[in-house]
Length: 353
Image (cartoon, rainbow, N blue to C red; front, top):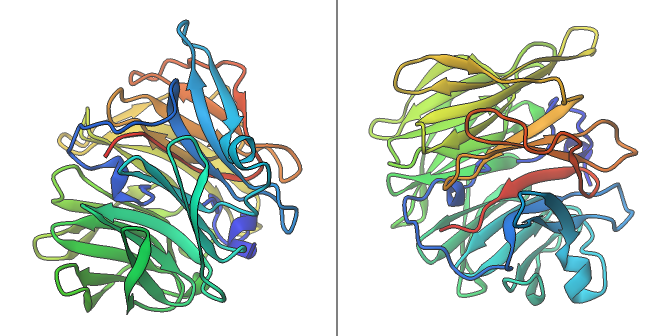
């Protein structure tokens, strides 16, 4: 994997509603397709460089509220996936973008490979969905449209696009420039043509999420990696961008119309600082702080759109597996000992469309 997967350029260097920056976390449709029984969430793990120990995992919850992790890709296919940068649940399938392996894999709801799409020299990164179309950004500079298991179109958006989301009939792509970019590309979805670049703070990276109603897109710029990252908001009606506050990882909670945030950053000497786990209410501007005592080096947060549970990925070191901490919507820690997952887990996604 490239240096982005090694947490080098941006302290969260995970990954990626948000959602990814992916719109699957934020769609308003509450129809839940068939997925693995007992699975409340799915994970993408990039693994270690050239070790073939990436994972596609399922977070299982039993009847008494205990959580555990299963590597469903290994279970179902008897082999490693290589690396898994992002994961998307759509139409009962699991889509996995693999950067170093340069492929897009389409799995059934159990994790068994239905189709592997080779994307040589393209390095796919992040995923989003809009109706029957799935979109994948890639270091080739393009966003690819996937329909019915096939790449059917592509559009050039800029240098090293990262996280993407869909809102208001448009696709928004973070153009990172591998650390030197400062724009968000806008693609008109009906024509699948790029229409404009929106100037933003330096290095928009792996956080890009849309609100449920599609009126806003939120993203994070890493700046120079020596100061706290900045959260910005795009008004999707006029594509104006405003800066909001400092945070490194964000997730949209549709139950509370809030952004759930982590703020971890490097200073000028590249020492790491963790400065908060909180919710920012988008209606009132109120900030609610959560207990951080269990966290060592939190890198990513995702929110279950149905329950409001907050899933925080903690990466204590490069040589140990990532650990998951689950909190209820009020901030109560449900997994005090954490849940050990695979190496370098990038995102948590949920079985909802």
